[in-house]
Length: 230
Image (cartoon, rainbow, N blue to C red):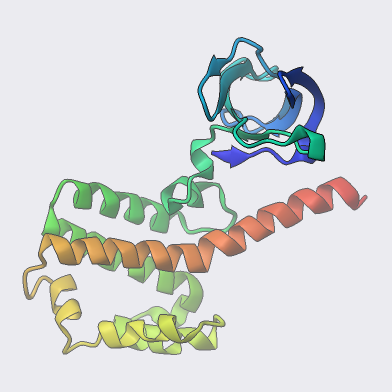
């Protein structure tokens, strides 16, 4: 779900004692074009809010809007919070990284494969694909310096190329050549499902820290620059 900024609401209508959006300027979850949605007044009502749809004028596909009406105090000048269903706005990195600029395509493919094999409980395959994701991340930042170097050494020099904090630097210790995790990634010892789950959490955290936030800032910066800079 993606929250609609009140400044993106072009007009309101009154619904009981509150005001709800009638016209919304927003990015379409389907075609990604910014357009004006006319909110359908055929609401599905619940005790917490309203659900309705609106067709995108550009691609003609339907978008779902959720309007939260619970505890809205219109007398204080507040309007109902409104959200648009947008799967790419999910916090899960796989739903975000594909739209980010400059992210390696091999990283996207490797991470998607790691997710798929993990969900299938293919533990050895998860180990192989997890190693490939880590290698792709390091290659992106270290370039030629990553060639022929063990993962632990690559992680040790990564702070020279990216401003990392201590939690990221500590990953080198986890991947030390004599460590249990390194042996599992090399298939020298078996990895159980609990460990692969922890590994998937680790991959998600690394990708979110190194790609998702910087990419979202860049995307927003470019949109602002395009709007205000000639």
